[in-house]
Length: 113
Length: 110
Image (cartoon, rainbow over all chains, first blue to last red; front, side):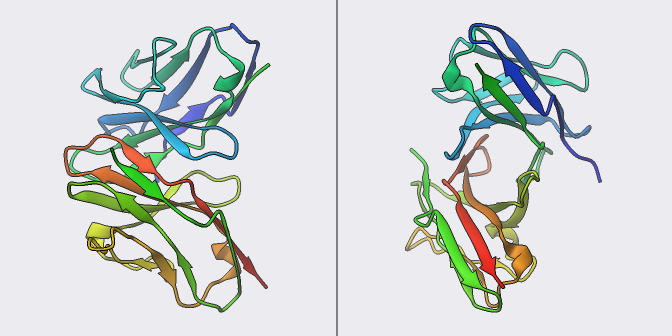
């Protein structure tokens, strides 16, 4: 069964550094999402992406964040100048056109030290 | 703004007992409601969506628009049901993102 895959599974970075979280959505899906979950808190929407552009973003998704689909398979989340409070589990998800279900990756745990 | 609430952080029941995980939402339009489950060390998986009116792993959920609720129920809990359960809302067919509730950890005791 096709799955959304995310790499790395765990990333440790120093405060102020830039990180790129990678996702490979399911191949025929066209809607992509990033969510995050700070430890002990709820899953929060960051951004959705369709047709090579951001279709929706939350207040969390400020200028520190950017997304890109650099090729036909990858969907990346870049976090510039990381802060301690960016430490969280980051989930990528994808959805097929016409279907309401979103399929989630296993997540990347980002730890900013 | 859309909002999803799940009043219980933790729910413990004994095996074989009925279980109900509560979910309420606020949204003025016609939302789609979902239940996602996350078993230990696994990814979020869709359990149910209200539009399909199906029963998965013995779980059912009915959308009550009058009470703005979408409670998840199972008549006889199993130990393997122990997991985090998230209620989620997606705004009508044109909405892009999912709004998640805070989650309820279900613990089914032997």
